[in-house]
Length: 111
Length: 111
DNA sequence: CTTCAGGTACGATGCAAGTCATACCTGAAG
DNA sequence: CTTCAGGTATGACTTGCATCGTACCTGAAG
Image (cartoon, rainbow over all chains, first blue to last red; front, side):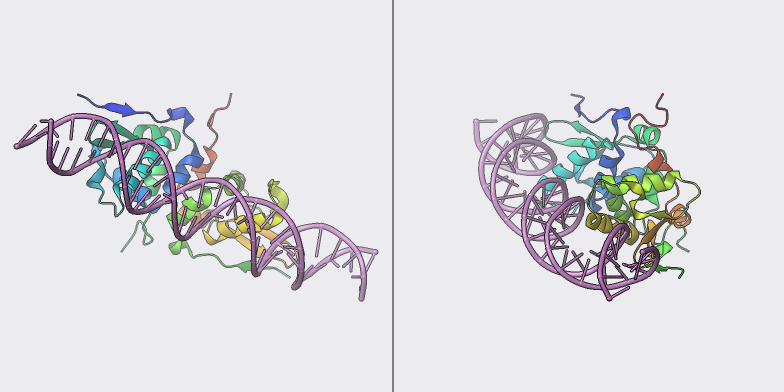
């Protein structure tokens, strides 16, 4: 079976407040930074991020990211796929994903 | 007297987490959106934003914005000036201020 | 069928954050 | 001096949120 896409907000309904609230958490931001860095936008598993938190908390965080409209969650029943909504984000909030890359406080020019 | 500038973090020390946490609040984000919209970057008074909250809470919010490195607070003793750190923000997080402009969920083209 | 791993639902807990009340400080104007 | 408006400090309250424990669901492999 192809898996069902769990619902998130439409492109036009994306709220900047929800996005900032979602990105305010360290763990969620690290997930988004990883996703933004991978330009192939391949679907990833939930535990491919090595988050140092319990699985219930991971469920919570991915839900927040989805409800903010940042990722898609594909439900396969006993496992789940994560995909970045790059096109939608770039359309609604251009530059946001680039911003996530310039996170490290040593910045874009380490040398 | 010229007024003393209250201390905030240096440009290189700006933390994206603190910035997102600061912008997660509605009131602080509205202040930042107003500041970002004014390209003259003139110094503004604290009560020129018409925030529907008490003055103690306003003190709190401006402090958070300053500690995140987003604004400067100039202390005149019995009043205070607010100035956007546009250059620093653009240097460290290019595109962030533009992002604040595309906030409204009807977007850049209301009509 | 049973077993097992990945994921969710619900509830409880602990902590951070937004809010305001009271009291106090600061500088300008009478 | 006194008065007054803008701002801050401290403390209390309340809400939101990140976290986890227990229990349950789902699909795949024996």
